[in-house]
Image 1 (cartoon, rainbow, N blue to C red):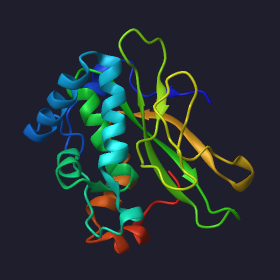
Image 2: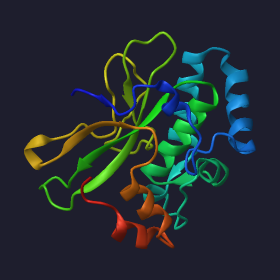
Image 3: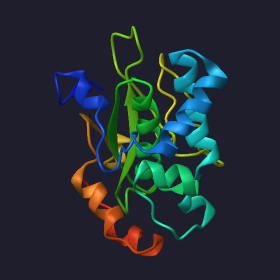
Length: 199
């Protein structure tokens, strides 16, 4: 899949916004702790990925009804759906000067029904000549996402025959439809009804 960088200036992928709030003290504190444990950019990126994937529960798996969307809230409450976890991972990357973009897929059930937009992250580590997509959604039986810059190890490889697709754009800020679904949902049940089916 050809990835399309929406902004030619990489600084757009380091910016702070209302969802990717890496200027928040809790995000900075978390980033500092992960950096201290690793000490280099690539090791840090992998540690941040594994932290968000494993230590922040996907609310659909855990049954947590809280809806989080700011990276700082996702990290402090340790819960969120894929979009929220992507915001948290992007914030941790940007906090250490690693360009991070938000990416999306359209996924369906095994029979092609019930389409939904899924969120993940692309990063461009220091010295890399290309972006790499990774998915901090959280593993469970049948889902085994890994941090890999050479070969994608995503939670959900798309199945075009079912109408699934990878959206190629690298977004510097959350897609408005994804962000609106999070912000306008009082709980996870309402969020499930508000999730976008396409971008």
